[in-house]
Length: 203
Image (cartoon, rainbow, N blue to C red; front, side, top):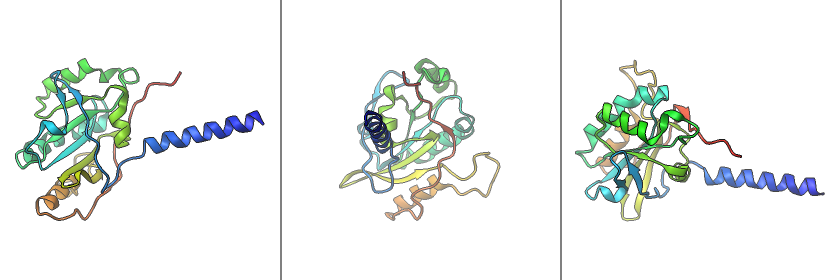
C-alpha cells in the first residue's frame, strides 16, 4: 500500500512540475519580471515605457543554434526597437549545469558582440519556468494592450536554423508587421529550434 501511495505522489509531483513549466501560448498574459542585466542594472517591461511590445528571446552563450541566431537577434533589435518593439534577451541556463553561461561570461559575450539589447540573468530559472521556455533560442513576442502584456507569438525566429536560406519565412518579422497594422498574426506558434535549457541536477 505504501508503495502505491508513493507512486501516486511521485506521479502527481511530476504532473505539477510539467504544469508549472507549461509554455505560454498566444493570448496568455506575459508575466513581468525584474532581472539583472549584464551592466548590473535590473530590467523589466517597465524599463521601456514607450514600447508597444517586446521581443523576448531566451538564448545563451554557447549553444550552436543560439550562436547561429545571434546576429539575427541583433538585427531584430536594430530594426524594431526604434519602432517600439525592443529585444529583451534572457539566459535560461543554470550556470552550474552550463559553465559557459555564468553571469561573468554573459558580460564578456555581450561586450564582445556589442549587444544593443539587455541580456538578463535568470537566477533560479524562475522566469524561464513562468514562460515555459524549453530551448535556446525560444522566442515570445508580446504586445501591450488594455488588458496588459499579452503573448502574440511563441516559437522560432524563422524557419532557417542553418542561416543559408534566402527564401526563409521570417516569423518574428511577420508577426510584428501584423501587430503594427493592428492585426492579429496569422501564425501564433511554431516549433522552437535550439538546444534544450540546461538545468542543475537534482540532489
